[in-house]
Amino acid sequence: MASEIENALKDVANKVAQYVKDAAEMNVETKSVEVGGNADFSQAKPVARTVIKLDGDCEAVVPLTAGAAGMTVDTALFDVHQRNVTVAIEYRARLLSALLGALQRR
Picture (spheres, rainbow, N blue to C red):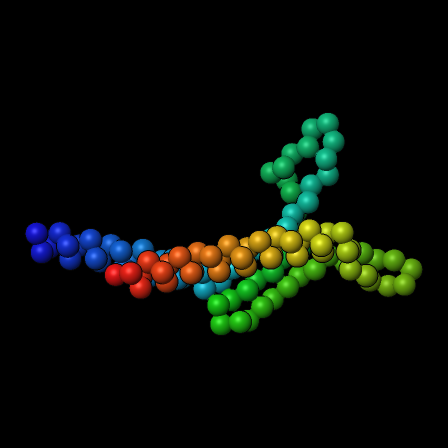
């Protein structure tokens, strides 16, 4: 009986460790694909990427377009990407909150 409880606790500890590892770095990538009669979504190309680490470090790659005035941010793609980032941050916060709540109840 004791070894079953011990094994169950080790399993829970391993799962918690994996959740923390997964939450330590969040990658949000927004892709685009040209739509048409035979759009192939597996061929989507990245147009923006944000990496946010749990320690606060952040890296962002934003979509630019070339124009007469030089390079400018593609605001429509950037807005879509920012919404994706916001949703991912909120999801991670809820997940970590639930994880902490579960650990506090034990």
